[in-house]
Image (cartoon, rainbow, N blue to C red):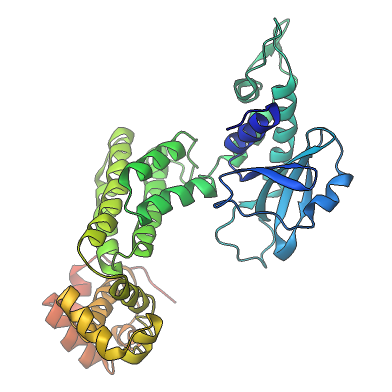
Length: 388
């Protein structure tokens, strides 16, 4: 796939820096990683600015809508481009699917691009090509002749800034596999992520790992919901795994739990697709779950899935065994449970938020599903923190 040296260099940059990479020859983009169907192409006018690039030095080029790219001239006719990404300090941008790079990370990436290109073009003793990746990643630990430190001891530290969190496209690969119910692919993507150094999100290493896994659990549950799993089923499974994460006492057990978590969420999607629940009903469920705090009417839900309200009502009941109104009511109670357990919001306020006409009406419906009043549930559940 990467037959020539520049293609190999581009692949090297893509895997080392964990950003989308593109190889331009003249005015044409001839190679992308990931594949063109998954990698967003830079704006058409970007090649016009390649003339300003200095050989051997990566530069940041702004695109449209606040997006940015790093470009490096590899030879007279070829340019390697990384991106798009958003600058971390650009608070006006809401590009959630794109990575946010701080100034330090952008400088590290630009520097690493130049190092990787130089290393891949160099030759080791005997005329054999140097192993560029290994050379780069161990450069700061190596010693020059005479036992002196290598010339660039800060390189490894700079590179590590890029890997403090899983790169966005690997997270997209993991989420995409779960959305398709492809457990094997999801586990492989998790393996790729876990080959990188995890972010330190707490002083205690075990607590840091647990926090990281709780973040992974959120990603998995949202991916399952995007794959059509009802939100209550996905969040119920998420709660189960969060409790299990807190119960584990060593890193090995947590690693095994994370792999099981990815497999279970993928299985949720796969089972749903095998269950015969149609895309129409799944779409209605997804719309309902996203608007539980809004007034929901059958005709407005039906418009979202492009069918007649009567047809949707009959099909929903046939495929799920539950009417739409009851589904909405049950889901509102389930979501209200989270507020009752983990917050100190007044019960009347929670009732109003989920469109119940009064606290007494909320309590009556709540007890039908939970066997307890909201107050009893709160007293027996996990204590919540005070909310101003």
